[in-house]
Each structure stands twice: as C-alpha cells, then as structure tokens.
Image 1 (cartoon, rainbow, N blue to C red):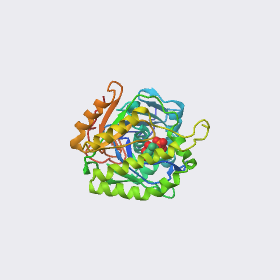
Image 2 (image 1 turned 90 degrees about the horizontal axis):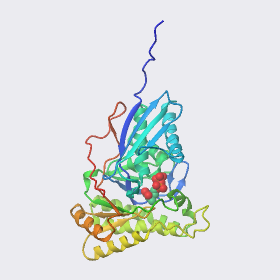
Image 3 (image 1 turned 135 degrees about the horizontal axis):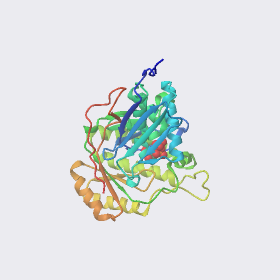
Image 4 (image 1 turned 180 degrees about the vertical axis):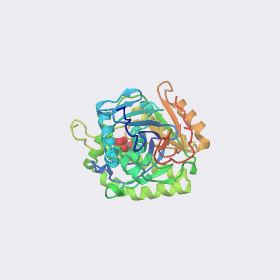
Length: 362
Ligand code: DP6
C-alpha cells in the first residue's frame, strides 16, 4: 500500500498581522477585574502611525510547544507564558490543539518610549485568529486582544478609539471614534534610554485603591471623557490639550500616592525622570511663547507631545534644542489604522489601504 497523504483539510495554518501601539489621551489606570482585564474606567486613544509591530503565527501539528521569537530573540519566560495563554484563548475558540510558532518584530526600539504590549497583543490576536481560520468581528477581536493586554483592545480599531469599561467580558471593548485621516494632530514621542522602570505598570494598576485620590480621579473621568470626545469631534487641539495634560497628571497623582504591594519601602510610585520634568517645563514655556503644543505621559518617563501637523517641524526642532540629542529618541506619529492582516492566506480581509508608517526615529 502506498503512502496516503494526510488530508489537507481545515483552515490555513498561517497568517501575519500588523498593529500600531496606541497612546491614551484618557488613561486606563486600575482594573476592576484582573483576570479579564476589565478596566475601572473608559479610555480614549489614538494609534501611533510611527511605530509598527509585525507578527506571524503558524499553527503546526509537528510542534510540541509554542515557539515565541520577539525581535529576533527567543522570548523570556514571562513573555512566552503570556503569548501561550493568549494562543490558548484562540485555540479554545477554534477548537484547535496545534502549537504555534510566533515571530514578532517591532519597527521601534524598546527604548522608544511607546508601550509595545498594545501593538504586540493586537497583532498577535489578528494573526492568530486568521491562522486559526476564525472570522471574528472587530468587537470580538478587541475583546480577545484585551485579555492579552488591556491597552491592546484599543489597537484593533482605526484611528481615534474609545474603550468602553463595560460590566462584563462582552461589554468591554474598543471602537473607532474617528478614522485615521479624520484629524492630522501629531504625536511626538520623546524618550530617554533610562532602563526598565522600578515599578511595572501592572503593579501600579493593582495599587490604585491605596491612593486617597483615586476616587476623585474616577469621579472626574466621565467629564474628562466627554471633553476629549467633544474636542476630537471638533478637531479642537486647544480644547483637547489642557484636558489631556491634566488627565495624565491625575494618573501620576494617583501613582505617587499609591502604595504598591510587595514594595513597603515605597511611599508612592514616581514614574518621572528629571528629563520628564524638564520637558514638561519646556513645553509650558513654548506655549507661553505662542507654540501650541501639549503633552501626555504614560506610566514611564517618556513624554508624548501633541501638536498640529503644521507645527511638527518647529516642535521637533524645539525638542532637539532642549534635550541631549545624543541619547534622546524622537518618534513622530499621527493617527494610524487599526490592526490589519498582511500576506494573508485565510480569514477575513483587513481594512483596505495600507498606510505607510509616517515615522522618524533618531
Ligand atoms: C499608563 O500597559 O500596564 O499606558 O495594557 O494591560 O498591558 P496592559 O497594561 P499597561 O496599561 C497601560 C497603562 C497606561 C495608560 C493607557 O494606556 O491607557
């Protein structure tokens, strides 16, 4: 009897997807349900066109364990476990048992100051779902991405995005408020190679309830969300800028007055570096002199500047003049599209019109 080829049935086993990291204008800070990554509050972001993660997933019945390679290196144990847990969610949905090879690359260095977990888990979700032959709606993709990394929920839809806190798994997802070309507001991310932060943002999220100011932050958020939604609807940078700055400072006020568990020597968490404060002060001076530029900050020392498209060159020059340009990196972005499939061999088509990344890194 001759060899009988195994029937090639079922979905294509491979897919590649891309996603931009996103920058929150209204921040996710604190989780209502850590297992499901349900946030305590709604948030609003834009995808950063200047940075891209590309992730290939291949389900392969010959593998006995998932293989995860990130930026050319085998993933460390923590990343490997987080990716496998996410693939398990996809395998459960698709009724698959095959292990996978995952190869993920970022166009931006880890020191570029943008949180890669949002683009990483958005691209992984998009690629794994397609490789598994599943067809999910954008809402379902966002829900799935959220379980890998909360902020990844916001890298699934296009452009300017709102993530609803929801009350359960199904109701906490992100959707597009406006497409990428709706408004050409730019983000200039300034970062310094300062090494890993002393307190991971996960520990920050989990410590919020120890801050006496957390309730005040939550009480203000519905108004903040309204004002940011309205400023985007009106394309009003002046209205957006001050609200977004105070919103970032509110996160830091909570962090600075939170007591992270397992760190009893810390009276609070300071994510600022001296460079952060100097940049904030410079931005306020530039504004006083008539340059319309605002900032936001995540749980780290990098500063994200917001300005109109016509002021990008002037703002970049002002930044270069004020920082040590040997060590600082500058990344320019505008609103980018949501996670999309490339070189697709199966699954649903991604949104049309691939947009080239509008990036400058120095
Ligand atoms: C300050 O990056 O800690 O950037 O998104 O679940 O990986 P995951 O968590 P983490 O949270 C982001 C916190 C933030 C604000 C924001 O992006 O909304």
